[in-house]
Image (cartoon, rainbow, N blue to C red; front, side, top):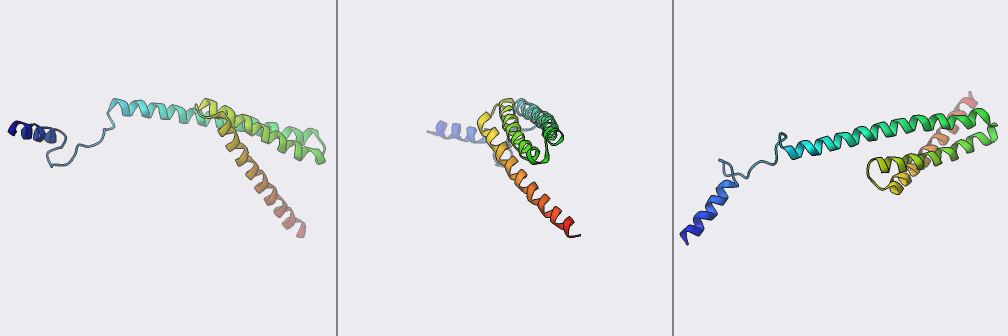
Length: 133
């Protein structure tokens, strides 16, 4: 019986440091920590490049209807192209980040529609202020 108690005491000593506290969690110089950190950084960099590159191209594509079509059709056409490009951009982002392409596309479209409405409201407000002066 005494051997049993001694073995439990030895295990308890191994799992605790000199102050009687449990051991510290994995340190930053651990190999698993470095692997996870490298994977996270690569995904963040890829996400940044994908988002910024596609946003730049999409904003240039949104200007084309404003240049080539009449004022009546150009704004609505530009909004439609914007929603379509947002869904493509969201799907591509989802695939690049190994997430659900459909979920990512829906999130992008919803955020885009919110921004479109907010900018239209803000534009109408500013036009109203400028018309009063």
